[in-house]
Every structure is written in structure tokens, then in C-alpha cells.
Length: 185
Image (tube, rainbow, N blue to C red; front, side, top):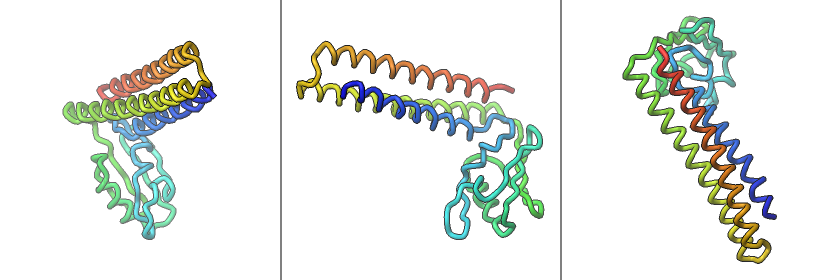
């Protein structure tokens, strides 16, 4: 049962890091990336649908994103959704496609993006620590129930802390790389 607490918690920590990385993909860096727009919810016949499920998204060059919907009638809904989103890009509807020009970021905007990166990294760290607390509570309950000795509990808590430190370090490393990418001119 004790090892179950640690084996159950590791995938949760991995998911926290993975979710943070997906969020990082949606943060602008001055280069066009389909990840910037693919999760924007679009009102598609009354249902909020991610943009990548109703349109093809491509980046023909470093400063342009082209969105080609599979259903032409949704062009205006895509335009409205992009305008409402917080990505800071102005959609240009061109017949059957939506073009988004990705201008270079100003220094002020880069600093705002770095703040977003840091905020999201802290959210991931908090989530990882919450998973650690959850597993530690399980270990302490096992100690109270008598199914675990104090020495075993101490070893498992040390192991849990090493696991937590490893995932927090992974979050820190990825956040640092994303900050460098955002600040790159």
C-alpha cells in the first residue's frame, strides 16, 4: 500500500508538468506557432469548440499563422474568438482563410509574457506540492493504522520529497528555457 501512494502520485506530477508545457506553447515568443491559437474556443453552432477541431492551422513563415476552416460559415466566429482571446493578434479574414500576422514583441510585452510564464510555473509547483501533501497524508494515515512502521514512513517520506524535488526542478528548468525564448530578440 505504501509504495502505491508514491506510484500513484508520480503520474499526477507528470501531468502537472505536461499541462504547464502545453500552456507554455500558447505563450507568444515573437515567432508564429500554431499552438498560439489551437486551443482558442470558437462558438461553433452553439458549442465552444477548440479552433484546431474546426480548422487547419499552418505557419507558412516565422511571422504568419494561416487558419483555414473546414466550414466557411464559421469564418466570422473564428475572427470573433481570436479578437476576444488574450493573444494580442488581429485577425485578417481573406475570403476562405484567416491570417494572423505575428509582429515582433516589444520589450514591455516580453516582460508581460515572462510574468505569465512565471505565474504558470508557480501554479505547476503548487500543484506538485499538493500532490506531495496528498501522498504524505496517505503515508501518515498508514502509520496511524499500523500498516507502516515509523522507519518505513520516514524512508517513504524522504523518497516522496526526492520525487517532488525532481518534478519541481523540471518545472524550473522548463520555465527558465521558456523565459529565455520569450526574451530572445
